[in-house]
Length: 74
Length: 216
Image (cartoon, rainbow over all chains, first blue to last red):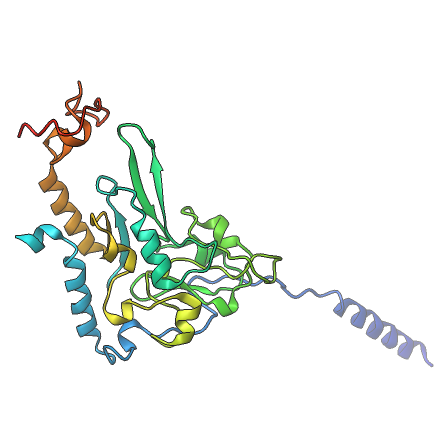
């Protein structure tokens, strides 16, 4: 084996050895708004409102305003 | 877009715990878990105040920021919900929450005896099909999908606890405060607190016998 091939083999061994020293991040990085669970249906997408968002909003508004007993009894 | 919030009027709350009972009944919450509770300060002395507390569905919720598995999310309506399938029961959300909302039932989980996190869902269920049995068993009833408000607020007998869109709640509360006055002007003040030396002041007036009648 020539000196040249010995040097190349030694460089390759060092290269492989150093490659094993690299480190991958092992901590989950939190990103704002990045949700990783199951997707959820919106309230108006159920069997009651069948996707009619406007009807749901109107029903909710009436329900919330109904909590004001001053408005209810006058 | 609606921003769903709770608002508890400490002047009206009578510590009946009806909201706590309504929540437990409606959602069949497991033993040892209270999604809602009533906190009282100055208990038994004049000036006592009570307040019903649960998840406040923060606009910038710290529990979402600290969850290591990223399974807590905020819906378009501003309700903070979570996916129990991905919860590992680490308890970070419990430490991050300023209201003590996340609860942990006993049960086998990744972190010893602490089970998967359970908290108030604003009666909006969770990431399962709306109104399904799976949703009910994991998260409780989805009243929002039925066009109803959370059971605790709808059950409140004195309407101390309000729930719904923040702007609408502000309007109700503003109207209420303007009408009821404060101190001895308020309806029922003399019956409750009597004519103390500073009955019209800080609310620390002496307690007189019930039935003195109102002078108004």
